Image 1 (cartoon, one colour):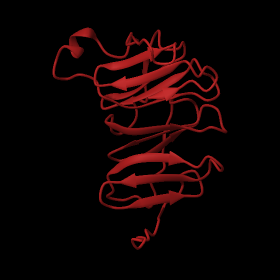
Image 2 (image 1 turned 180 degrees about the vertical axis):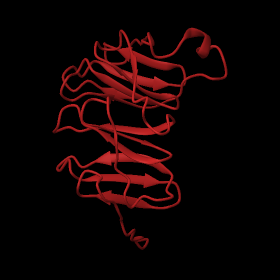
Image 3 (image 1 turned 90 degrees about the vertical axis):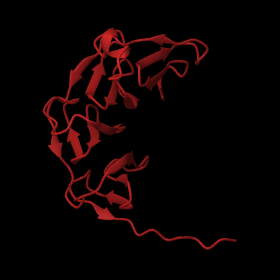
Length: 179
């Protein structure tokens, strides 16, 4: 689920059946899957699973959605979706973030690591040095410094980068004593 930062009444929700959009603060929803998933796929067991949906903080009609079948973008508020990121090594995407300070910078994660695009998802560069053999489950960017990113893994802990993903380091986890 993500909200348009310029129009807070506009929300997008990703589901196994694609994307839904509300323009009235979640009172009503409309399916907006044109180009995203074919109707026959929705009726099959191969339904599209949206893992993350993000409204571009610089262009609110642009919305990205990461799925278990690839990356899609709409530039018209969900009317038509286009598949991008076809050159990514693995199309099963687990997470997606957009850089809040630099337009057109997109990060995605898959089973092979973290990837960064500086052109809105057309070309990609691996950003996984130090993340060997980790199953990334979540990706986040610091609200204060867009050079700082975090990944949460399945069983391997938390990792951080201070250089936009050029190199990663494990974050020591300190377990607090119970009160």
